[in-house]
Length: 152
Ligand code: 4NP
Image (tube, rainbow, N blue to C red):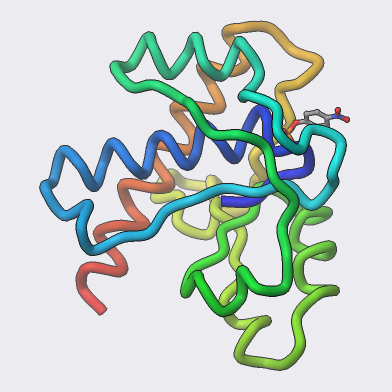
């Protein structure tokens, strides 16, 4: 899960996906992590609003910010990004087509009408309720993502 700062969207996405696989008792099949394309928040805990939303829905975020690195293309089969700028910045680091094919906008998996035309907007300058909307959007995308990859 990749965003810009790795404190708002991607740690929330990481927490949502970890909870989904834990609830489905398939967590041993997955390695799930998040990262930012920038290094502003390396070592930082997620934004308090992301942590509060996680708590609201029954999970905890204890991720520490880290920057996306080329090695991630070797560790992760699926690299889900939040917006077009994240996509561009991650793909810039791809060494070949195999790396590039691992990168997807997370909204590609949104089952809602028009959901795939959207991005996951950065809620950093928004309210707690904007973070709640981010959670709902991510959950919808990631539930559908899991069902898609389970049928591959
Ligand atoms: P994120 O949000 O990419 O969802 O973690 C941001 C958080 C912090 C900054 C930018 C985006 N920042 O510029 O510090």
